[in-house]
Image 1 (cartoon, rainbow, N blue to C red):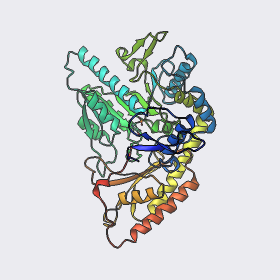
Image 2: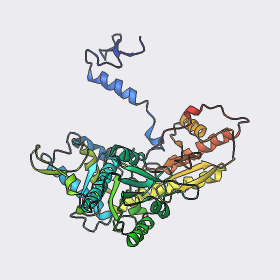
Image 3: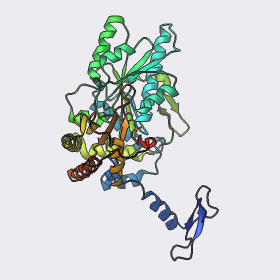
Image 4: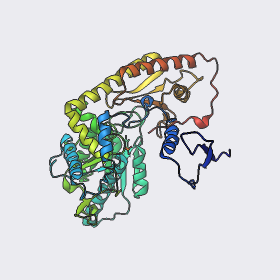
Length: 457
Ligand SMILES: *Cc1c(COP(=O)(O)O)cnc(C)c1O
């Protein structure tokens, strides 16, 4: 059989010899549904096992009854608000609930939307910052041709995309060995009158650490008193937006700080919903410039929209509301607390193995990260460790830190709902066995540098 085809038994069952089907062209004839199902099912069954995926932040398990709700709503298009007004109402309720959770001064009036994930939400947040800045500058009769945005060199890639796609100069505050998160001094050195906003991360994807939002906000307050510059903050709380309100309720990072004008979160991360949902909420309605809102009437009804996509599935929004009802604040606390306990248990154990030095121990996000101690060995590195763990089914990424620390390789584990203590102990055993094997090598493990950058998020 040529390499560009796969074989097919068209009369399944019973077996009657196989025909071939092209891989990269649509076949001329169709096939029985069972056959198509089997082909696709068997193909995707070869993917990695989601239970052993310690790389992703995104939900890999929900209660089976949530799957029922999913199946009942996957044919509804979220944008058809006129056809599905109850679904639209559920989306609105979720926005109110988040605005309240994050201490908006007017949770019932403020504006927010669901998105496909934090990436879309960040784009919307960034656009609102840019437009607000343009409006203000025009009023002052000042030029608007050189906007910049300030964030850490360890931001999630979406912010680099935002700056690139919308023509805003990215100004990085580089992290350093003694400054693992963006700090107020770094921010103050980067901002000027062309700064549309500062993005702070509640949960840096590289490490799992929180950035000091309140300290940065205070520094910008002082700057405003000193020289009159009023620079808003957007909090990228993709992960932390559903962690901090439950595990660190005393931490001030949200709309309690007047300077925080918008917050995004991924419903499909610690919001505990299957992938494709994110949220963005503005502090108050006036923080989203009115001229970014489109009023679309051709689906019947007149609805305001602010989104990059038009059609979208509604199932994830419905599942988000299911989780709010099902878990309540107490339930979210319990789920996140278990993840945090597992993360802290594992990070403590990993520290005692010997070769590793922790960056984060799981007390911010239920995420921990580590590096190989400097000078520990030249026989193996974290990429070798990652590859060997993969052969046991574990997906644990190793990757370089951003500029100024790019020589440091880091490994990270994300603990999510459903990762039990039993799995944690299995992982620990496999990790220790693998380290002990690597330590037994009497010369460097041969490796191809091309593969020394693994997947990460
Ligand atoms: C995951 C993440 C994003 C992107 O979110 P998606 O929901 O995957 O689109 C943005 N920022 C941070 C801090 C993240 O952790």
